[in-house]
Image (cartoon, rainbow, N blue to C red):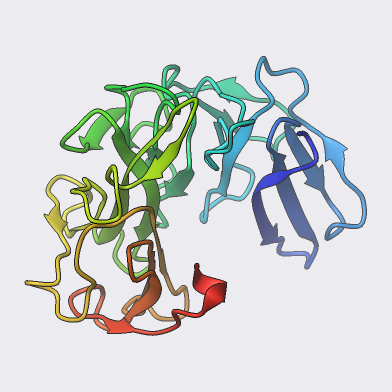
Length: 271
């Protein structure tokens, strides 16, 4: 399964050169120094090769973060052993924690502070886990604190978006899921069963969170939810996109930072 691409990150250097990092489902991390013409493996010496996410520090692209463990919950998915960090553009790596996460779906680095990063951990595929949730480090990965967790042991975090203008504002998506030998569920046990999936917003750097709901946030869809993906437009911090899996899956857009929403595309491209 090493041919399946599970993560990609890139940056344009001051010289104009484009550097790309690509993570494979079970084939490690590959780096290109020439905009994608040629790639070389840079993660082969590490004990795991399943990659879930790659993130570059917005203030210093030599700082590369890798979350191991593919986050697309296939029956053939491999596992990881936490987070790795490079401070020399991927030439050498250090393991920096979250050993029991099993898989990391996304890492986001603060645009204002290189030592502050967030890791979205969906957790174990086949079993309950207390390690699910959103984690924060303020010391470059030396220590991590769980700052958001689900109400049950099958709900983890799969998506995190930081406001590029104010990193105290962020959104995080929680996902209730489970794969079994005979079935797979995203959300509750049926399309109408309760689900702990949800979208949450913080205005204090993740210290406190408020769930986005249709009762409070006009235009957001009704529960139950499956998986949610969230992103903030880099060109406009007030523009937020959320793809919400539900009995009526669709793409939702907010132009006020997630306070109110409009339903947009619900075509087959969004299913």
